[in-house]
Length: 144
Image (cartoon, rainbow, N blue to C red; front, side, top):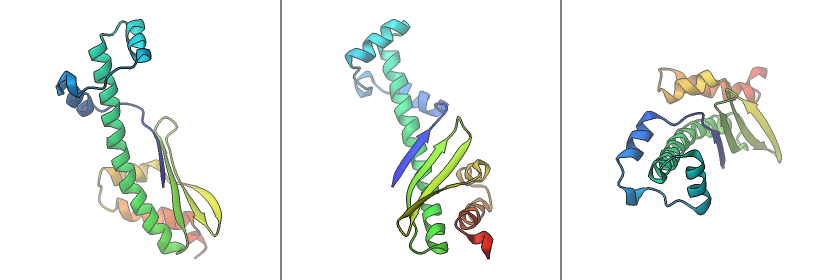
């Protein structure tokens, strides 16, 4: 399964965690990254902290996407047993969440309202059930 996410910002907790790491735990900058830091007039260690914070934010977002993907995959299988979830796209900037499922050799892209996904991530009561219903609807549940 492919996860594609376009997070809009780094969480404060990720910055805080990256800032608390010893210099040896920060990423080693490439020549291009060192040049970029100089061009931006940012100390190299600060640039390395920013890279680490971005890495931590990406890991955090991936974990959330995996959880949502598991729920979607199970709901898709329940509606269409031969459905295979192939990709999940979460684009914060465009306020868009969609999944791609392959059914009988054909891949379909289906949107899910981001408000539902947000509620699942915040573990709001009934959110997982709403997500399952949205997946069911997108895969033909509207015809029942």
